[in-house]
Amino acid sequence: YVLMALGNVWRGDDGVGCFIAQNFKSDDWLVLDCGRAPENFTSIVTKTKPKCLVIVDAAEMNLEPGQFRVIPSERIEELYPTTHNIPLSYLISYLDKWVEKIILIGIQPKKTGEYDQISKELKDSTKKIVRILEKKSFQPLKRLQ
Image (tube, rainbow, N blue to C red; front, side):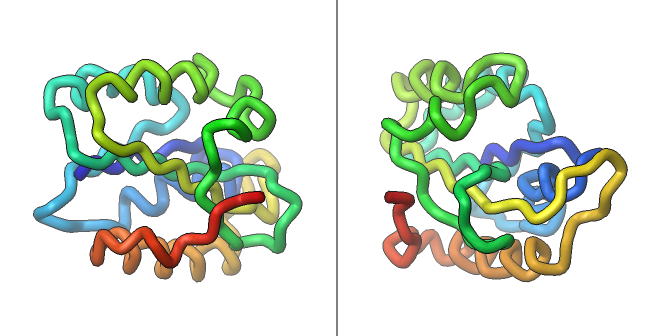
């Protein structure tokens, strides 16, 4: 199992993926704190060919802050137009050749201003997400409609 955690730690809740990476420790997982450049980590994924790749990132989904959802592939371009160096849809399409299953978890941010700290709502959500990752139990995750 591989976790790709995305985000910008200098923009408050946008850094939630990186916050998860820093707080998730498991011998069963390879945790990649990708920051704003997930494309720099693709070779690690293609070499390890994991059974499951989980990508976590903040996503504006019009939900309450801290709520999280599995984002279906058909919604990726709408929610992540160009938030990283390459579109997230391209990254996932590329990695799909080497991974059995890819799960994108979006987390609704509260504040993403420059130099903001991560909000309490998102810190609380990260604890829930870490428990889900530890158990490798993705069925309880709600899917974004």
